[in-house]
Length: 228
Image (cartoon, rainbow, N blue to C red; front, side, top):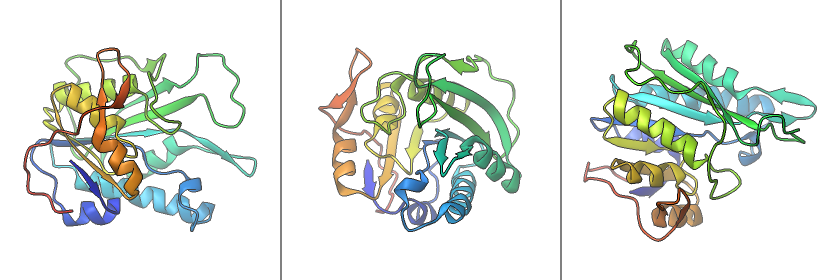
């Protein structure tokens, strides 16, 4: 199910269902044009804290964030997520690096890697099936701002196998790559997106056997009674 709504308001109005965990990417400063850089930094940390507070006690939130350069400065989103974790008194489960381009590629503008950071409200036991710290390929990206399919698979599989997640929630779901991958793994998925066009695309996106996400189906979710 994909809800057209403002993400933080939706989280505040809808308690996390049992078995929920989160995989999401918070918007860049360029996507929140009403805020200057410092305003966006503050919003980003507050938004990440809201996501962490929303997950149930046994849940995990995975943030996928790509650094940006702005006005000659490097904006480290990994640090901003870490700051939110610290302020919430939460726990860093793992921090992976995902290559968006082959290692050694010169990045002209946007960095060629992304952070993928998992956090929980309570300490977690060591993973039964540890995964790689560096993913050499993010996988197919259905659009320029998408989380790569392989990175989505690693995040969702961890939540399914280690956090016993049954529902993956993406409160900033964009065009729905996370939701399509979650469904392909047999998980329910809930997305929240403000833009109507992106909602329509997210509702139709499915993951093919070839690992390519394309239109042709819909997001599956049990009836948890969410509003929105």
